[in-house]
Length: 298
Image (tube, rainbow, N blue to C red; front, top):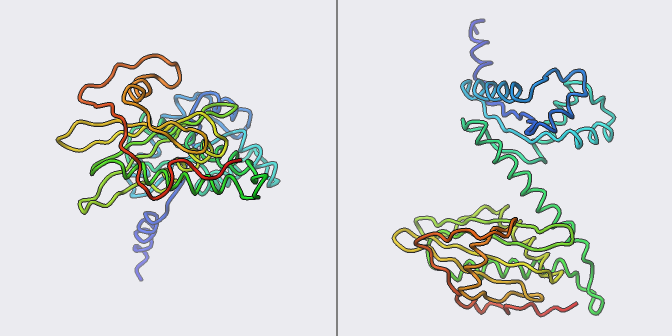
């Protein structure tokens, strides 16, 4: 084989390699990393500019790159647990490789860093919300009277409720938001579904799992909360429905209650102007494949 073919072959192989970049998204995390002598950046803005340039270069070479959120505190814990020296590029590389499999990340598809960063932070919040909800749900324990695992039963019920809620609307897209109060802070998750040309419901299974987990936590702990669903279909007015958690089940909100819930900022409590061409509706009855209320009490 001619020697000149080797560089060409390596370039082809390089395109087959998927890489991950650990990104320090905010100034606070960037400052925390500056305590390491081998971390040579001293300006966060310059650092972000260099990361974006690197991402563009890798994309131009045909490489697929994932951007993961680099957390200095978790990095220090990782080094302590694995016996690695934290003040080396090699240790940071090993931690970043771990992030590729377990941490929040988003693929780089040529978008500006100003667009990628919010998506990355949202992914981190989403993952943390699900993990926290799953931890709380697992800690609910067993029913004192029958010994049934309350969290597991609640998750089964929540999954069935989610299917029935999705089934209340006709064809089209659906956007659901589930919020549940906890002792520390409210948990909020979202799920968006689309419809294939054949009429099949399409959704992100991870998002569905996260929403079912948070809903299950609300059911298992009988916490305050609810589900709001917006449906969209070309040529028709969007409709918004809602249900509140009630005991270990849900009950429909009136059209006025749906309006109040949808037009109130969840964080500040301030009123939000209602959208035009949106109907706020009392939801239709849920399907009859099971009770709206759960049969388990604890």
